Image 1: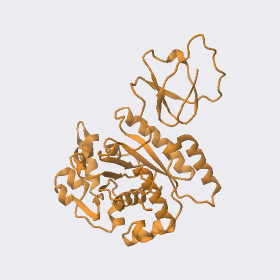
Image 2: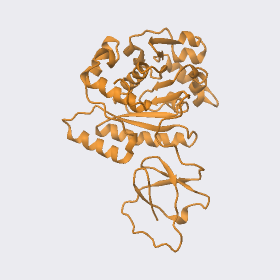
Image 3: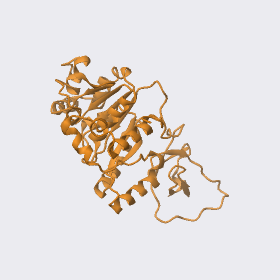
Image 4: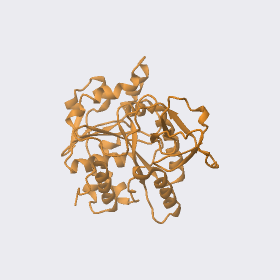
Length: 326
């Protein structure tokens, strides 16, 4: 039996005899979206087979996954910027996303879960503590959280997070909820909580995925990054078995270089599969790499650059406010 995903239009060849009778929904492993499972009647003529069947996972579920839209207003939005591969612009995106939202008048908390602690460096602040001290109780929230800009606060990362990893590992149960338990009581003071993650797959990354509801995944337009993105999707699927609230909302192509033909081909393929989840690309811009040396965001360092223009467009997409900054 051939089932076509209504979201990404991929055809899936499955054996209807193996579908349990109570299953009413299907999840496409191409785009990750759920859709109603329409099983044809026995007297319907079978469709022609499609070569190269794509896998599809089936599960009983009362409602399909929410479409990649804007969550209801009034709720604090928790956005994780994550990909298991490094060098794709996660921290640059986290900082400029948070700064852009703050410029748009939103109250934003930026949380750094990377042991390198580069988010605070990029903003030019030197906090005396951060996420580790908040979780362990060494510092109260008003001291652990530092205001970096108007409407923008930061909960810094750094080397002390290595100790937090050990703390999580020593827990007999509930270790994956450590960060969520620390941040949930604080989020009511903010419109957005943006969480920057480290490369790889460690206890802190798992903790982030058990806290955020939305994922933004920067993907540089090169072979290794695309391959890492595929592996990351598999990891997300394993987390969604236990926490369906976390959804991939935004795929952000980075380091777009119009001189590289292969990059354009990668972008077209991603857009074909993931549709509206794909954000406008962040073009390669040397100003983005220069700004951190001055402790400034791209909006402060080079407001007229391509990098600033592209991140403004990202803010418009995330907020659903197309007239921002105009």
